[in-house]
Length: 456
Length: 180
Image 1 (tube, rainbow over the protein chains, first blue to last red):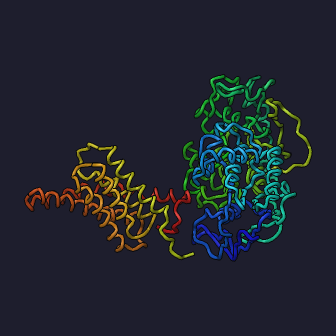
Image 2 (image 1 turned 45 degrees about the vertical axis):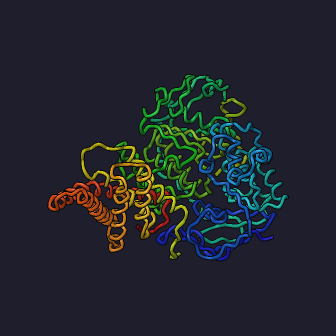
Image 3 (image 1 turned 120 degrees about the vertical axis):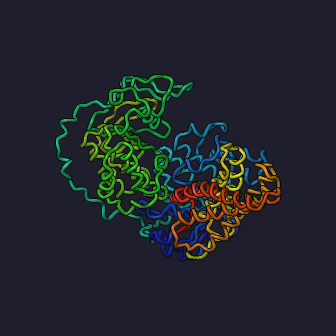
């Protein structure tokens, strides 16, 4: 049975802006699973919003919906979709709005949480959940309305491997129950066993197939990569002795029995599952998070404290929109340069180098998740910090953008910057010096495996 | 793509929000500046925000009338039922003048002109109150002129703030208009 159909749909965000969707045709039936892939910023999320009916801008073409069609949308950034403070209230939110009696809500809420593998008390605070757990919570909040069509925006990037396998099992059951799914995903192979229809969205055109990068950026070895790094080598910029980490009045989250160091010119990865404490550790190093229990940690020779490092330390947050606030990309990149009295031309040079000058006058808030990540990273890179902390910077990026990020990181590294990069999957890249592993409550240095993995 | 967007619930709520916030701020701040006309600052700001966001005739009037009714019901300010005129008159004047202004004109200048137009109407309400109180006509005219000058200053200040706020709203994808 047909649930939704797009016929010749064209759409853009303004008459002077490029067309996001151009003559798009798509039909979705019950029990089908569609996957849309495409380059970063190609309009995949906009397509999902259009299918969900939350994009109320004028468009051309016809959108046909099955009468009483219920759609559920799980957006890429969990923070924009979570409204309530506790897990139970979040899942029950839609039911409350539909006027369902309270006694009927409880079993529905519990069932929805079980379906996504979240076995938590209903009064658990949403703020204590990891990003991956929040993602599953959002799916539960949609499933509670028993939608006919579920739309998921890049679930793979947000979830760890365990989370992905759990989600896969959930989605398989949903399809068997007759629910239709549309996934927007860079890494379609992770969901290959349930996907029936592959689509690629490029330059506004939707066609059958899987998007592959044909023109991967040829990163030539620039002069700076061959420069000797002797002046920086061996400088310890971040050092920690053995410690235990935990939030105030909470049990220990993880222990670091041997301490760790971060030296100049190093790119070190911090790998751990969702909720293992990666973000908290990065925030502690940056001085953003202060627990009562003192951690024997020194950053640039000082105990971490917010605001004391200026341009010497940069932190890229997991949610890039948290650190974007200007009205144009160029203004965004020049903001910190102006603040620290650094040459503003660096912003233009950076955009040129990354081949992103076409974005210069666009609003950073309207960019895709992956583009926002790259712009936020480029804004920090312009400052040429000594220590750079990156919280899952590769989320929402295709291989093309992935290459740009590594170009930037290698460049910073060659200038003496120590980079700590968190991810919930191991990252195989020649530029990575070491890997810190945060598993089973232990933070230890681990040998880098050589298995072929793609993260991005 | 060029078809006119119908008035949405979102737009209506926005007008109501602006009107309520205008009255709430006027009531809460109760600025004892001893300067006549400072109320035009908030009025011109909120009315012009409605003008910029909705971009349709009647948006400022709707905001002004709602604000007047809310203020009258809550007893904000002095003037009793005249408070309705205080809020509504400038809004109506600004809406009418907005019809005459070319859209090609720079938004900053349009906002300033509309703010001053609202101020003149607001001063008219002051003059009407003075006439009703039995003031001599020549004194009423002098008072009206002074009100226009003082109110015009604050109205211009409020109007200057509007374009940057609209730019920010547009940057955050909260405005769907291509041009103000």
